[in-house]
Structures are given as structure tokens and as C-alpha cells.
Length: 152
Image 1: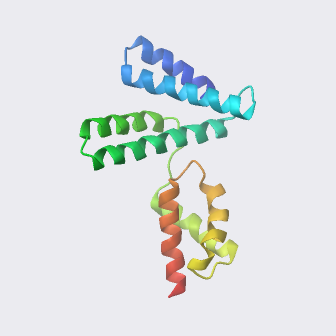
Image 2 (image 1 turned 90 degrees about the vertical axis):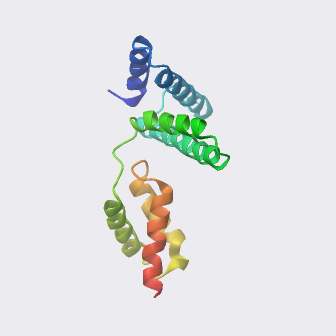
């Protein structure tokens, strides 16, 4: 079952079991997917494109939670985090830091990077390899760490 089919099914299940937060999140996700289909003028998005939409929504929730915490609105921050958790079910298994580090080392070798100045080269190689499977900020941090080791 594709993600495009799974989401409406989960929405129906949430409706039946009266899970209001999950229902709200899934409705929003369906709307975002539909908007992306209209934007791309496609009848239906591929699973990879749906994962991109889900990742974008998760990123929005994490950023909103961080902003709410800055202004001491814990309840709103917790809601945003709960929404992100619901959305995480639709993402592929996330890579561990060790797995990301191994991919980064391959990308550094492949791109012939010699230091931090080659960050862009490495990122061009690594991002397609980990897209949807790892948080971009974590990947960036690890790439920087590995390139700084090369500079020494």
C-alpha cells in the first residue's frame, strides 16, 4: 500500500476511534499533499514526493515547537511535538548517527574533499543518499565535523 493510500485509511481509522489530534494532523497532511499535487500539476504524487511533503510538515512542527519554547508556551510546544510524532509514522526509518557518518565518509571520498571549504561538494553527494532518511541539520553537523578533521 502506497503512502498516498495509507494516509486516507489512517484518517478513517482516527475518525472511527475519535483520535482528534491524529485526525487533525492527517487532514492537514492530506491537504498539504493535495496542494503539492496542484502545484506540480500532477494527478498523484509518488511515495518519494509524499515523503518530502511529510518531512516539510515535520520540520514546520519542530521549528514551531522551538519558537513556542522560546516564549515559554510549553503546552503549545508539546502539541507541536505530538503532531510531529504522528507525522513520523509516514517517514522511512531514520538513519542512526553512525550510519550517517559512514555515508558522509563515502561522500567525502567520492567528492575528493580536502577540508571545510569543500562542504558544498560533499553536501551535493550526501543529500541524495540520505534524503528522507536523515535530518538535514544532523547530516550538515556530521559533514562539518568530518571536514574539520581533514583541515587539521
